[in-house]
Amino acid sequence: EVQLVESGGGLVQPGGSLRLSCAASGFTFSSYGMSWVRQAPGKGLEWVSSVDGGGGVTRYSESVKGRFTISRDNAKNTLYLQLNSLKTEDTAMYYCARGWGLGGPRGQGTQVTVSS
Image (cartoon, rainbow, N blue to C red; front, side):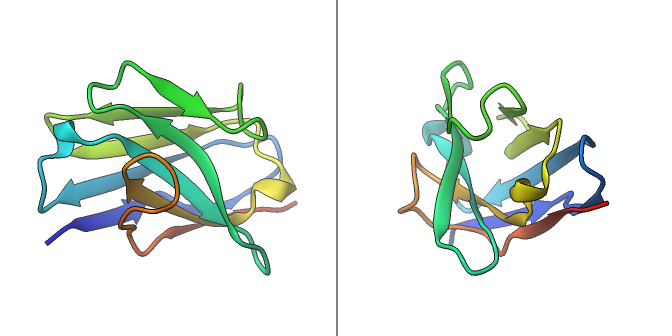
């Protein structure tokens, strides 16, 4: 059974930083690309970033490029998202997902709230 457990969210002021983690189990982690997606209040699911199985290829949405960094540690079966220079519009529930994009299994999410 695929299990994805996100952590690291919280309340942060604009301009601040957070590091999200996603612990994966139930599948061969290094064999899959992984993604972060988010859902803001009242809006649909939005793709944020993806990384290939080896960690060498990354992609970002235009809204987060240059501010967020995706990475993974295959020895620990863990996916990360470093969020810097946070803006109020980054407020959302953040999910890690298996695969590239929005279609794969997701975790329960971790809430990121950016507010002064």
